Length: 169
Image 1: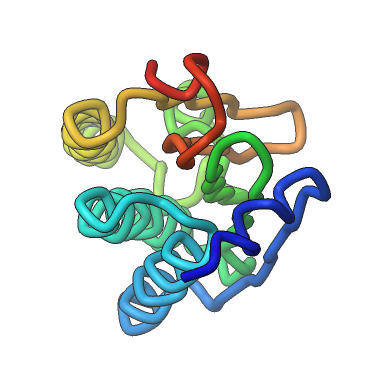
Image 2: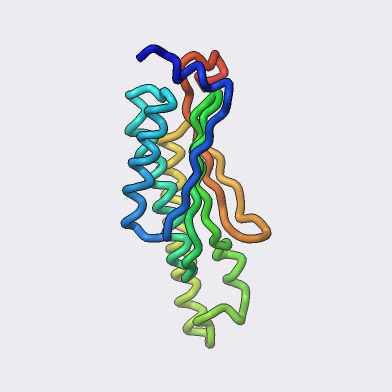
């Protein structure tokens, strides 16, 4: 390597794509993440971390869409500047916001509400576990949302060589 691709970071680059919320496409997202990260100059020792973290975030997004019966696309964005940044965005609203809605689909009596509550707790626990796993994989993890329009964004970043001391944390 002649290092020229690292010099291009003065001009930020962005790769964006979206996929149907199906588990089969999470593998493709992981592969793209590892390839873009390698091209950006992320240290070889961190590429497995990038691949696994993006896979976890995409799986979380797919499950959020599935649990809410949504076919909206899961959006993924990689940006390369001072750091390699991966963002995974879903369009699923927070289940806790819907749980108090008496008109929510499938809620017709007290028994259905109890079952809906159990499902809500399982989904919330599953999302929390995924975020704990991500927190163990990625030092720089930020989860925003859900927004007023619904959805969350999981943002993760990794240092790039030669980006100075700020990249070390």
